Image (cartoon, rainbow, N blue to C red; front, side, top):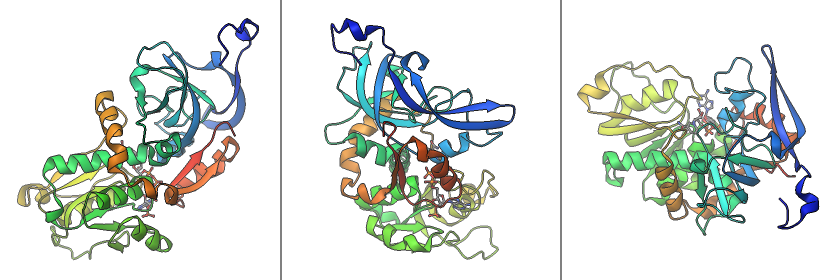
Length: 342
Ligand SMILES: NC(=O)c1ccc[n+]([C@@H]2O[C@H](COP(=O)([O-])OP(=O)(O)OC[C@H]3O[C@@H](n4cnc5c(N)ncnc54)[C@H](OP(=O)(O)O)[C@@H]3O)[C@@H](O)[C@H]2O)c1
């Protein structure tokens, strides 16, 4: 933040804009304020945030009574991509392009919706040469969740020979990325989306077919037809129950989300009659070694030519409150990028 030997600047606090949530009783209030670097939490690496992006979880932390945010006042933003400004860790050097996501970021430790963030080195992922900070924000935690889902399905034994892969919540961040990743990996992809206007978009990402949110006939039977080789589900609720009922014998469903609800009404039969596996996907506490390894593979796995199509909108901090509401209303296709320094 200051030139070496520039003593005049030494005592000057660095001031920068941040989107801060404060809590009074049950009310959570957002405001764009100026912070100083001394307001940032402890950490080894100071990052100038070039881009952040909105995730569903960011919208949840703004809601009264949510159990996601664990500290106030809080700069939300569960992910960020930017440039190392200062580092006390030998692993990172000023000028290096990095991303940070998950762990306590944006829920109990100031996150990406500010022009600067300070984070522990063990949360930081070096960006591979082929990925810009903008790529990292577009792909983001959503793309990482989709890639982890794909890896878990492949580790389970799922191949493109097993039949079409179903992606639920397909027009959202995780869903769009899953459609693009699975298609690039050679799978036939069926996208389930409630947004009829986005069928063309989903086909452009590689879906061979687009179906509605209700993707099976409710025939009243405990087990349905074996329609899918595997499923990437980020919706939960009824969608997850339907996926379990209709995935093929020995197939797996990778479950990461709950936009359709956090209940799961199913029976034991998919598991004991069809040998179906339910693979839980967590990207908050993914060990850093695995996170760095997956990001190192991301440029090869992800069709980067689709990145710009996935950008819904670019906003500054002053556009966040309205954008977070739109995300909660499921009215967003793809990713909303946040440029905190704008
Ligand atoms: N496990 C993890 O580590 C992890 C990581 C990242 C995200 N997540 C979770 O994954 C989910 C998706 O995240 P995201 O960032 O992709 O969110 P998003 O961009 O807001 O997309 C969510 C999509 O879910 C679908 N949807 C929304 N409401 C629905 C409803 N009532 N019924 C059915 N579908 C609905 C919509 O797709 P259509 O309109 O196309 O149907 C929507 O676009 C969230 O629950 C998030 O918390 C989990």
